[in-house]
Image (tube, rainbow, N blue to C red; front, side):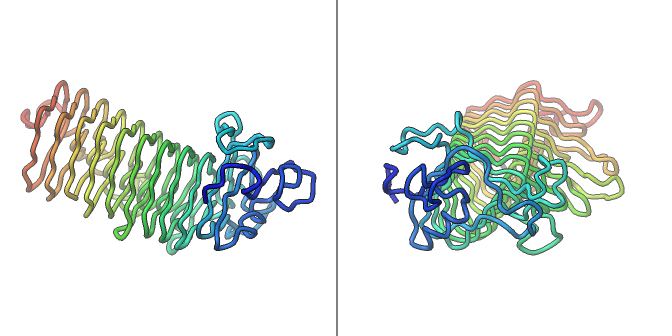
Length: 379
């Protein structure tokens, strides 16, 4: 994979007018599907010029998606004249992969593709794209998870990419069913799940994710008929998070007639382990664990929690732990600041159930809970 010049890469440009064979920018493939088929399972670099690339033609079946072969390295952000990969600019030249099969600009996601990207047992790179309008909307099976990307096995490297306004019953942005994934410089924004968990990212028990220099912004879990957990990230597997911001993520009960909890506004981690360093959690919300709900061994270092909330749903008045809820897990906090978090019931900052926690060189200040509840639970 180390192609650094155009002659060693397969080229894609939706506006190209040449031979459509991917050999030059003039003769670039206009359809990303053709480039993916051309590289095959042996893999190669694919350079994709700015523009919008749809998973299928107008009105196509929702099963249409971009299938990533083993060994492929996809790079976006080209204007269509570059001769070296280093010349691209994914901010100035947005390259969009879209599941908007109705071409309605996201007005409805009922007819969007189940997945924008699918990778099965593939080692691949995705770098410099916006992935949007995937909607994994069935009640069960593969098509209920991974609206933006469904990754099952292999090793995924995702960099400088935005997962934007994807939907699903679970894992709306990315579903990591098996394998490993390394996310760097990547944004998960305004993705939403219904029924299950993981608005931005869902990690299965036999999978692991490393998240560095990323942003989780405004993702939602809207529980309807079950608990809603982990609006930013829901994980059964191993999570290693560094230098990442979680802001405005919310887990809540969508149905006024359903009596279920919502847990982990930014993260819910089970089994784990979970490690967080040099990160920040601002303005996240859930009924239990406004920022984080942990049921796994957890270490948090040099991290800030501010303005997170534990809020009740319409049927259950309980609302505990605005920053962190700990359940049957070994948790260590070192150099952590928790300031200005609020719980509608108890635990303005943190509550640990049936387990000790270790807190070292940390600040808990100006966290609040409902007046009249146990005052020792304000912090």
